[in-house]
Every structure is written in C-alpha cells, then in structure tokens.
Length: 126
Length: 311
Image (cartoon, rainbow over all chains, first blue to last red; front, side, top):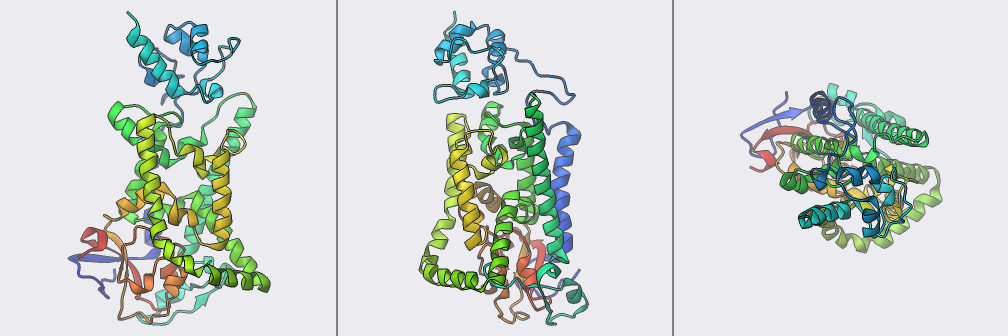
C-alpha cells in the first residue's frame, strides 16, 4: 500500500483503496448481523424465542408485557379481572379479550401505562 | 448533486495514472463505474430489502397474522432503549434485541469506517440521494429549472450563516430522544421519526412523521441530505463515535490543484478543499470527493494512528 503524501504527522498510516473501504463497510455491517443471527441474539420479534417457540406471558414482571399480547392473556397471567383492567383505563367493557394491547393504544392507554398500573397494583396487594 | 453537473472521475484511469496525473471526469451512467457503482449497489440492495420487509409484513398482516415488524430492523431503536436496557434489563415498547444488534453494527462501523453507515447503507440517506439525483436530472435537461434553482440559491445564500449552528440540532435531537425514552419509557422520537413513518406507512398514526418525511424529501430537491446535515439523531451518534476512528480522509496540499471539486461534490457540505485531515463528524464516507479529485494522490483514505486523525 502507498504510504506516501503524508499530510499529518502520524506514527503509523496506510492508504486504503476506495473499493477496499467499501468491502470493509459491507464486511463489518454484515459480519455483526451474521454474528447476531448465528448466536440467536438477533430477534426481530418478542413473540417467539430463538427456536421459534411462542412466548407466553408468565405474569412475573411487568417488563414482560408487550404490545402484541392479547389483553385477555395479560389479565389471566397477572391474575387481574379483565373488567377491572379495562375500567382502569376507561376502555370499553365489551373489548374482546383477544384484542392486542397495541390495538388499544390511546391517550389513556399504552403498554407503558399498563406496566406501571400492574406494578402499582401488585405493590398494593397484601 | 447540488445543481452542478455530476462530475465523477474514471477510477480505472486513475489507477494507471501516476501520482499527480490529471484524471478525466465521467458523467451520467459512466459515473457509476468504480466505487460509486459499488456504493449505489449496496444502498439499492439495502433499500430493496427494506421494501421486501414492509411488503411481506403487509401481506402477512392481511392474512390475519403478524409478520416481522419493520421497526425491529431500525438501529436507532437500539440506541434509544440503551439506557433502559442497561439499567433495567428491559426493552422499551417496539424494540427487540435485533435493534440492539443493529445499533452495535452501526457504532462499530462508525469506529472502523467513520460515517459509512450513512453514506453506504442508510435507506433514508439513499432516498435523499435519489431526490437530489432527480433534481439534478431535471436541472440538466430543463434550462428554466436550472435557472430557477440558481436564482433560489443566490437568494438563499445569506442563510448560509445558519448552516453551522443548525448542524448542532441533531445532537439536541439525539439527547432528547435518549433522555425522553429513558424518562418516560416510550420512544419519544417515534412520533416524529420519518423512518418509522415510511416503514409503517398506512398502518399507524404516524401523521407528524409523514410530514417530516415529506419535508426532508422536498428539501433534498434543493439541498443534498438535509435530514443528515441537521436533524438525524442516528447520524449524530455515528458522528460522535467516528471522532475516535483511525480511518480518515487526507488531502495532500502538495498534490492539490485547488480546483475545489471535492468541496463542490460533498453531499454534506464539508469544505474538503480547505482541510488537510477531514475529521468532520458530518463526513458520511461516500467518497464522492475522492472520486471528484482530478489529481491522483491529492485526496486519499488512510488508516493510521493516532485515532481521530489528530497528531
């Protein structure tokens, strides 16, 4: 590689041909993604784990609650009566339990608000 | 791209030419030979992948199921959730581990190749390049459009004093997005994010994001990469890490003929012709300046110590 035409004082430097730079860009980006896929870290959904097994809410911590979950499943997992949950956020009482949380989002209801409510409710429980 | 005829040089000739030899400019499709063709190919491949994800999601959703969310392949989601992930071990809504992996890829790329993510991969940057290319094409073939653009530039020239302070805006956007997400537990930037608006077009209430998207695309007809210059928080994060990169562009004052073609070709408006080592956090590594340089050896990429390009 050419190491001529120094323009800045430097202890060590090498010229990078433009095409090699492009190859470096592709290799680094694709390499990290490839590593993510190979290690099972690159999950594009919270609904399944690496093996494709479906995630079910366990009702252990509020961080488990995701927008794709059905409101009925959340109520069951956290042992909350569905009418109480719906009433707490002024949601229609006839909301089907299969409705996903993200489809219910409004100014009064969000996944974050539900997480906070579940935390508060479990802290207040005897 | 900035209303000037597109001038990109014949890299194959430059390889044969000796140091200091003047290279012949290339125009039109010929300009896509060499490294710019490589770059455009990478940009196009990434953009087509995104289109595939969006269409696949729409088809799967229409069938009553839920496909992969296009948002899960947004690197900025990983940066926004970083504080929540490190402090609480959780992701904010709409973020998955894929966002963190992609954020890691972008930041590692920023260290190894400076702003190359913006110049080579980011589909939003590519969209702005397409808009700028269309604008340049129209100006080349419609003299009235060229004259109108020239007059507009002349009238807008006093606003150039705002360029430098406005470039700081993206760091404020980055700070607000990270702080807001950590504080409120939701991605506060999401409602105004043009990328999310584009990915979820027609699916969710991304009204303001769509307005931002429209504004940046219209803006790109008049100025190269306005979103990247002034507002992109991912570009800001990229630029901060890139300051520590051992890779930099260097201009040889001895070989330079002061033609200013490098500065004129830079889509980020960096005054390459006046620098010796280009360490600007705004550099997107597109190599347009290197291709535009008529002197072999006057403008080259180097890797070296010390990192950041400072002696």
